[in-house]
Amino acid sequence: MFSVPIPVLFAVLCAAFLHASWNALVRSSGDRLRSATVLQIAIGLFALLFLPAAAPIAPASWPYVVASALLHVVYTLLLVRAYQHGDLSVAYPVARGSAPLLVTLGAAAFAGERLNLGAQAGLVLICAGILAIGLERGRGATHRLTQVLPTAFATGVSIAAYSVVDGIGVRESGGTVGYTAWMFVLTGALMAVYYRLRAGSLPLTQDVGETAKAACGGVFAALAYGIVIWAMDRAPMGPVSAL
Image (tube, helix red, strand yellow):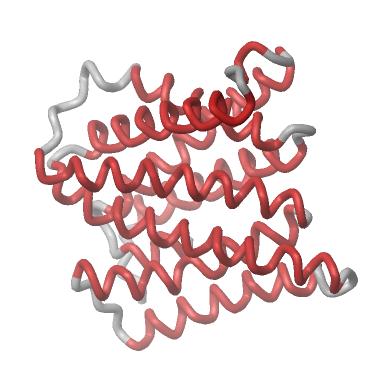
């Protein structure tokens, strides 16, 4: 058994739906980097609303906030690149299917979390099933699969990295809301700076319809990962990531 409380289980399953929804929005966009940047800025602005009511976070958690924000920027750029080379049905399962095993290894190495053999076996089966879906759907286009696999797997590594950082950081913070909000705000700011340096302008001044769609995705993403961070404060990181 994964030892995940039932309320946490249902919350994380809702988060999974929201997460898949915003990924679909980014994948369907004509300019994926712009949409992903607007999405991260929207998350940051949405998170600002929660800061006045959030308790101050412990000083020991600030390095985790900064590290997580940087890793989220890397993750976003890798995700955009993965979707440029492959369909959502291929890139998404490979990225999400590889992450839970890496999260489990990271949680064991850095947080001392140990799963029993039954939980480990269940985790492996879940990950294998998710990966099989992506590989099966990409089998008909081998040349595209060889392009998307390295980037999708690198995306999975970045997911695992920020998940472990956040799993430890939120436990150090003393406040899930404050930790999550500050991480989102910093990520949005870093993505805005990156896009400004690359494109010469901010993405919010361009196509209104695409901006609104990406901003909606940002709300979905904020709720999804906010739930995940809340869950990792209450359950082992590996099983939460797998769900």
